[in-house]
Image (cartoon, rainbow, N blue to C red; front, side, top):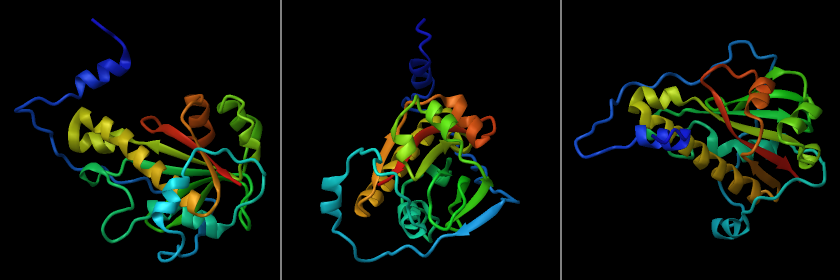
Length: 229
């Protein structure tokens, strides 16, 4: 029997006529009780800006080159699609499980200490978890990508599949990975609209990134977005 993990995963999560998903209740999203610091981001602009079709025509994976800082207002706009709003968030989540978590490894962000931050989607703010940005370790974790040095921040998208699996069983793992893709796409569009450079890196040393973020078991880094100018 083929033991390829990807093929086993898809085989175990297939649906056939007559099958039903368990439709349980999703666990709550992550909450940090005592972050080192909380950065309240400005209210993102909801109107105006370049037309969506012009922005979509420019969306492309482009690594930062200049090494300049970003502003808190720019980070606020980039993360705005991920924020909790009255009818959910800016991307679909199967069953409203929201298995996505987002972190910023901040290197150069104006009026903000370098370090590791968790993005609190409900409050639209950054919660500081660590006061260190370890450039050498991040660069090594991303397989010596030169663009890491020029990035103002690394936006890490992680998945907690058990939230989706609590609702949909094994098939929830698929939905968790899809959700990360939806969210990364939204952030890429927002970054492009602001004239920023953004490169989604999906090839990295998983355990190194997990250790840099101090992620618990069951939470998996999926994409590291290099963000800057």
